[in-house]
Image (cartoon, one colour):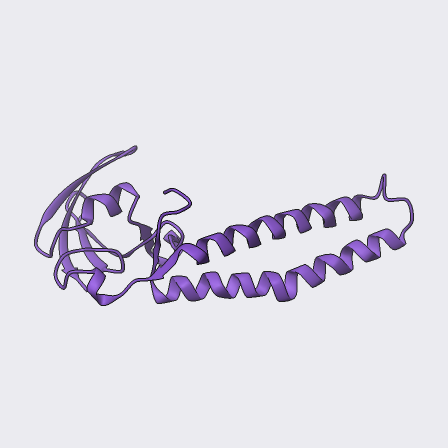
Length: 158
């Protein structure tokens, strides 16, 4: 995705990014500034590991803040008109049956910025996400992944 491309986000995804940015600006910046001030008070900063750690954390926080600000400038909230009622699209929750293992899975298809497998949110750019986009309940799809080929039946789309 290029930096000028629009970034579609669900309401939850947008809220999550905005909350993270707010936390970095209002809490983390102050915490790291206090750590730097305290480390400087120890004297010579050339061999001061506390100072070095705090400066590294400050650089990480500022980098993440800049990244979030850029993402939010490109963000557009996913609206109902962006998705078909019956086809899988960004924001759809999909119930799948793994036909090889006879196991059921449920995923929400989200943008790469929101993807979090621990919350069962998979990217529309992942192999499974790409394969599901545009399909509907009842269809069978084969997905080629590094571990092999998975075969899924789409049970439901919401």
